[in-house]
Image (cartoon, rainbow, N blue to C red; front, side, top):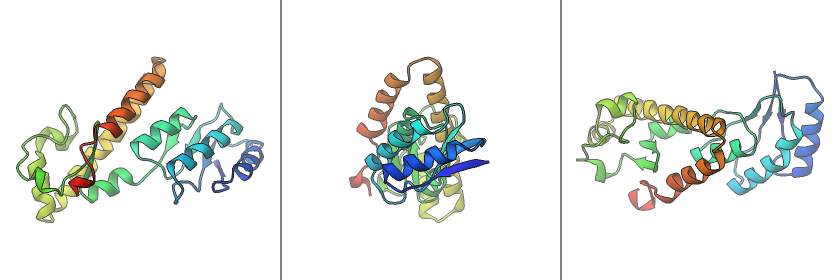
Length: 195
């Protein structure tokens, strides 16, 4: 059973509530009510204010968050667990997460692209299908296209979490974080011009 911290973007309410639920002997503590319209900076500020008041020896769960960068930033602030619809919802809408950003497979530029979604990816979609084929499936409104992108995105997220654990265990999280965010944000395959 988890206690769920609430309080929108009001640090004083969040802190007071974190102190109150921390007095309960629970299995873990969640932070809810974020990712509902506030900016990423506001969310990170609330995590900076709230997480220190939750028991360090128990898991901290950030509800309903995450883009890959959101997850990395939240881990850096002490969050352990996440849940989010992004990998599946975005996959159903033609978007694939990669180490270099997000791709929109609905774009014409992928119509004849014989490469996998991401070079070196071990997911079933990348091992067997090309960007062009997945693009075709979406244009033909074949459900297989959605399924393949969901599989890829879930694989990507699981791999991201393994990378995070490995970086933490190696004592290299800060360096890894900086490089990963640069790769995800600075060298995006997907941009407004792709739409």
